[in-house]
Image (cartoon, rainbow, N blue to C red; front, side, top):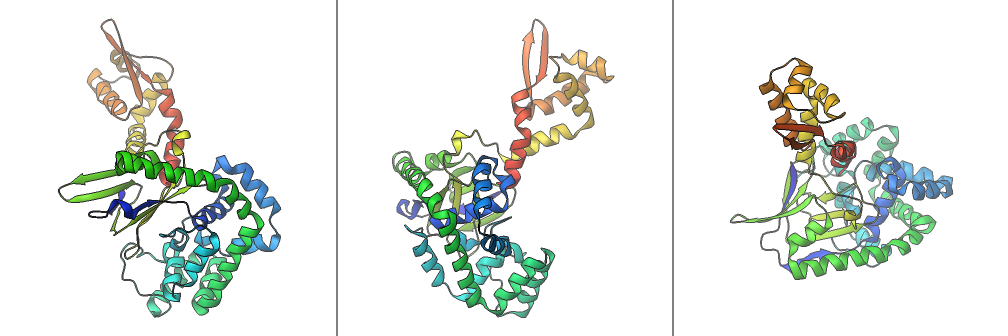
Length: 361
């Protein structure tokens, strides 16, 4: 499973690495809404939340469906600017229908990836669908979506004031601290792309990004637990100091694709593919293999020893060991004429965090 972005024929100068203050503000308020996703920012989230004005905290809760479980697309600008004010000005130039679609499409549309869906501002069926989906998320989201559909211009102004108040309360200081790191990361990726090509720059950004080139064209593949395809005449990649473990791809039809990746993610450790995590979970799901792991965790065992311990044939043991070995869960060494198998503690210890990173990516 993956998000595939077709960039066939896109010139190198239209593939841009650049920080965005609006995107980073979206990440910052997400961290405040879901601190459990970001244990590395626990101290920042706790201190910032404790210092928030209660009125501002309530307003953030009122609108948090736009950044809590996913990110509304208007928070991922395809043309990053130097300042938050400039990016908010760009949003002001967007018409009401497009703004409302970008604000609601993640949480209030089951048809996000299909495109051509009428706006809830002009289509009664789309309006009812948006309100029904919002109601399922709770009264707070239902009330906010109802207000947005009834008075989109006023609600947009309210959202801008909210983001400006967040900037004044905590984000301006945070942005001053991280913007140089993000700019340096973007410059490094740009130089790497110039010297070694886009594939190297993508690999440096995240192990979950890769470039595919063949007779059918050129594609960027984003390893995620969903299936989607899009294309574009340009591509923007946004580094984020608050991003990990999320790797966000904007793939809405008709929009320029945007990828937001964790800056300097290699410092935290490797990134396992979704396929690898699935294979490891499947390997451990079988009850016999689960029981065998009890022995393999305590020390090295041969095939015959495991067959005797669990009352099954040596060929059966070999088949189970082959599944565990293919999943990368075993280490194997030879002692004389015996081959000994043992659970790889380092891999198993990371499995929980690898799973969480895969579902949050």
